[in-house]
Length: 408
Image 1 (cartoon, rainbow, N blue to C red):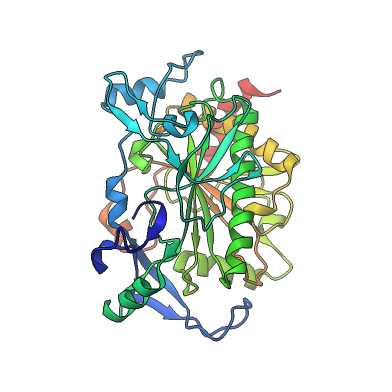
Image 2: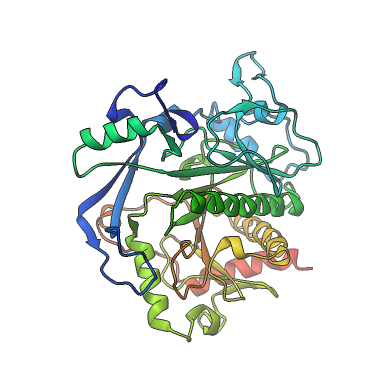
């Protein structure tokens, strides 16, 4: 059931399809209409899981720890030529590794090539494409190994609904992956060009808007959209080429407990948005501030050196970012990642964008988190809290000092 397609040819069993399940011990029915949600459907907030067997079929990107370390060595000015599962997509044909083993068949669905719209987000036919032009910076594709189904034959959907236990449901949505046209393994300052990273963001934005427009045409609404990067194997990055993912949830059944907390907090702030007004500890925790963005070490970190950043403009969604904000974000993120490298912070990192879902009428200021990998204990898994050892303003001071050598 690759590319989120379930049809008569590939459907075998109701337990081999993507499932979404809400945890009954931490799920609450949404009764408020304050966020503009349509009232005809039951919605929840709490903890839920996507369970998708096809995710286990994802190819692995590194053959050894030594190979992984080599790719993340930012001291090198010239990148080693590398073929990965995306090479076949870029070249539009079967690709082979250095041992002659096949690593991709070239089939894909391209939603956006840079900002140009290509395949419809609800297309049913993956296909080979012509070689992607050298000048292209980024592509956004339908994820071949998604957590949700985009397209389901109506007869199968009815059969699944009748046979699945009441606490389970077929999970529907669009999973996107955005890749760089050329191979770059990380956000090292001296390796990935700023315009390439900006191109990734622009392709993401264009693809999200295309998907939302097409989803609305199919009468989907109230749509959570979560863009993120998993950079490194320890934080879920299965491929070495820098790439982002975007989950577009079309189940129309609510949102997670963390997003609920953010929505409620911004509602309580009213016109006094915390991110618009705060000094972030009298600037002690600010590590970088530009005309468009503010980066700071959060006062309540979920990991040591946990960095938050937000646009200085009060906007609600990633897809509202303007070109100057995106270009500045690309340059600033490279600086931040290089500063973290220089003080030996774990190179495995997540970037998570927190956005107001489409269809929600909520006062929300988009923000994002940079979370370095770190082993956490049992209490932190049992409760929505974290134990950190580094005072945020001290962490911020270390990063600021590391950044000084890169100041313009």
